[in-house]
Image: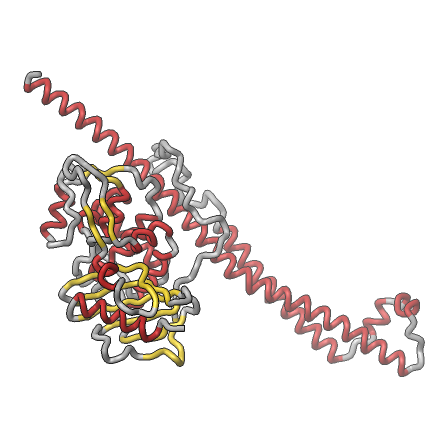
Length: 444
């Protein structure tokens, strides 16, 4: 085959691949758009529920008050008639005209009636507020695109027609991720070297121990817990593939990131990207996963910040990249990271990835036997005496926060805890800090 024919065939194949990639990107954008619409709908329903509950309480109180009032009026009338020596037989009570009964209401009864009227006004106001919110939540409101169309009106419905299977059932209450200090919240023992720490009982939401847990830090590669959480909520096919680009590998190399070792042009599975992001803390896998999920790294970071806001963490948490590179605008607290870990634990895929000790990527031309990767933290803490077992973990390190980690463990009874620390002077010291915290506070 001549050079011209080979070049022409190469150009045709490149064009086909570009068209396939564009079609795939359109489907991903459509899935993301539908998920965002579903999220907005659930948030509106949640706001309605928050308004409806007080309204229902007021209506219930009104009903009880009205019942008590009627009973008191009848009781007063009965007592007065008994004093006059009249019969209180059932036939006379039933025959008593309403006008006579109302004429027996005392001044105190009138005051009670005024209170009931006031309660009815409050109930009407609350119900009106609910109805106004419900009107705002009606589908098709101004500014919201119809399903399958973008602002230009172009049909962008995904070819596979999927994207809604992972949506939470309509009306299901969203879990609130929060923990609180108590009178029993302690300071970590002196042997814990980390400058920042929080240890939470997931069953009660109690913070059992903390040290400057609300101080803003650089989360380093603990960021990747949020990375896989956001991706897991939007990715549907783990067997789908992604081809590594030189921009992605250069990003990892130029920023001195840890990496899985994927080669330029290597086609890997999405599943490999998830495990590669967590186990060796691969910057190449993280950026590839972000690009696959959202179309670009920048678009994915927007989704990360939206997720942080949905978790109620936006006051102290903000992210500028999916890897954990230091940036003055890339920050959170160890408390924020503990809440992100708890949310990730509720996602089956994230929990599976964070729990893996060793994983081998799929075979490719560049790596015929795959690449074997491992979770450094889990492998080195598994033989330590924590009084139970550390099940999931992610480490991190940047100069600005030293060694840090977030982990999930259980005690001997199966009770779950989340631990997040930052500011340890070495990776090993970080591990021993987690061992000490589990040993001290995760005991029945």
